[in-house]
Image (tube, rainbow, N blue to C red; front, side, top):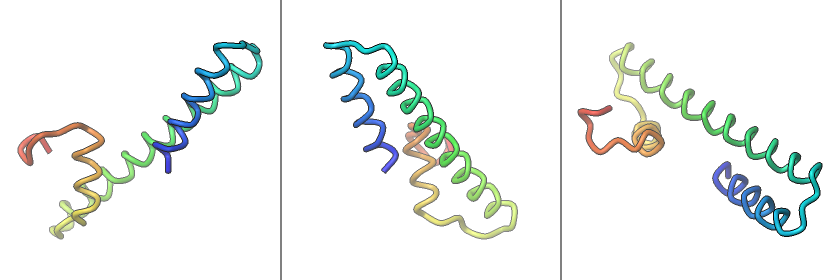
Length: 80
């Protein structure tokens, strides 16, 4: 959902570039920044969950591991 929202904002921004309205472009840029922050917060939550599981000696959820690996563009478990 966050990726889709970010894509929509980028599309809106490109459309507004062709007939610029400064306030509208600023609004879209602000939305893009907010969505990026949300995405970073979500990644941080996934990392915290994986670390918590590791600290507690429990296997982390595969879904959380996959999200962390993809978001950080890791190529191996060693990098994780």
